[in-house]
Image (cartoon, rainbow, N blue to C red; front, side, top):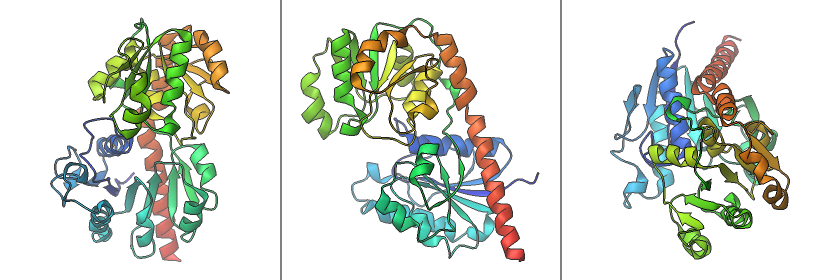
Length: 348
């Protein structure tokens, strides 16, 4: 089949791929490189210090996270998006990675080239009502849970995130600690993870960037012996932490549309203990790659079942389900459906 001409619009907060743990930028990078490897003509709209095998179109030397004078951030994102729309005739499809909201909808009826948007959070009902003013605009959901929340929106496909499983080393024998890896927010359940670790008597390592929530709510529990703060981890450090953990704790309090840390931990052979929220059951094969619990009490009481899972099997299942090539292939299929539908509508 003929290669597609694809404009892939990244966030311009930081570099692509990100230096630290940023799921949106990471997914953007993996998909971009996978599309190039598949033979497609890809232009990545991102910061100039990004690294890619695609054609790089950059109007900023670096991201607004690294420059306090780059404000307001929304305008920087809008102008990066506009740069792709101005060249729309050169592409078969434009793919916008929406960090906070799909501002690309504003161009849905102005662009001669179809624009598809991927959302990376769980939308509110008010957001969905607003976006439904553009019922023709195609969205790709990152889970069935997110697709359910996008009721009334034109969801043209569901593509689960993929990861480069080759970069996550398998470890068959872990050290004696539990791991919490993720942003420090109330919804992520870090305080619940601390409670679980204390009740089962296993050390807990926390890995994330310090913020006000950490300093005010989490830091008082960190004693350096039973609860250890590791700081934000880059990829090599993250892989080492995953591999050494007996289990990843994921006691989320707010539903999420995916949960990338689950797939990453499992790719190292580390089973997960997760609460039944959001898309968790779409990611965790209950009883194989981890266990999904109804509440905190059940997680505490049954955590030894997680430790007993076969780590080799955990790794094998993660590779089979979350390899990056599967994600790339599914996006290509979505692109082709949109492009063919657009061409068909123009011929009528």
